[in-house]
Length: 428
Image 1 (cartoon, rainbow, N blue to C red):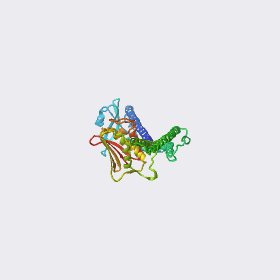
Image 2 (cartoon, rainbow, N blue to C red):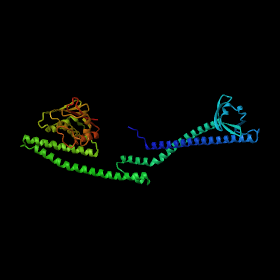
Image 3 (cartoon, helix red, strand yellow):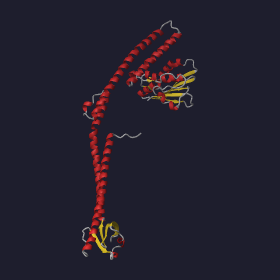
């Protein structure tokens, strides 16, 4: 995962690099132009002095050549042998030569040669002094580049704080909404610029979102109320019918199934209402819910699904007992989906529910699942394959959301022998 740097840091680095690069570019250009112009001036001046020296020897023989910075020699074709051997074959023009001085140091010279009227003039200029000046200039320019780079960094710090201050204030005001629990208008606190336009867009989005949440909340309350009323009527009527003295065993069993279905529907409504509000609620009066007891009730309510299949359902509760700080209805909804799926997909064999070590596992001998499909089954709309694979694919998605709401970890995996699957809830 790539690290995410703050916008202010990127602005500071960009501004510093721009200032450093621009000053470095100007420094290089200045050094290049200075060297080029200086070289052209020195070359043209030397060549002009050499030509003047030849002209002077031609017009006024014997008159010495005079210059403050340069040294000149003149010979005729007949006396050229007096000149240094390395100079004698040089054509007219300016040449770079290197000679060793009495101290043993190699010095750089420019030598101008002019041949005219049978005369030869040499004018030599010591460039070593200019090289020392160039070195000092280079050091000064490098120091200036670093100085301007530092100034760019300081200016970038100041400008980034100035430019991003409205953005930071906007972010802080958005964070304050969590404390007050409601959104307040943002646009009045900002100028009519890009940040103000963003604040105005956020206000519009907040208004639409608030209206949608209110509609959703009202709908959930209305649905919860309207559904609970007929379910309460069904439950009370079933209870009255079960107390009838002339009730046959077959009719009593059917009434019991109606009662269980009514209770499951009530529990499901309560769980869905909690999910819609993202509200985590514990049991009343600080009591805890015993997982083994809820699992036993769920198993009894799911036994009618067996429908004559050669299937056994077992419950194993190991000590110490596992309890959770959640309503029994929430845990019942989660276990109903897991145990119900195991019974539905297992044609023969067994479904074993084990409670202990802070978890509950539902182990079946059904067709099993592929390891790569284990996580995908908890996605909304994904249905299992195999026998009895009907439904909308919402059950495991609801289980995952309930577990996330209460900090539990739900997972599925194939059995080690490949015959069946294991669904597990680890309680936090």
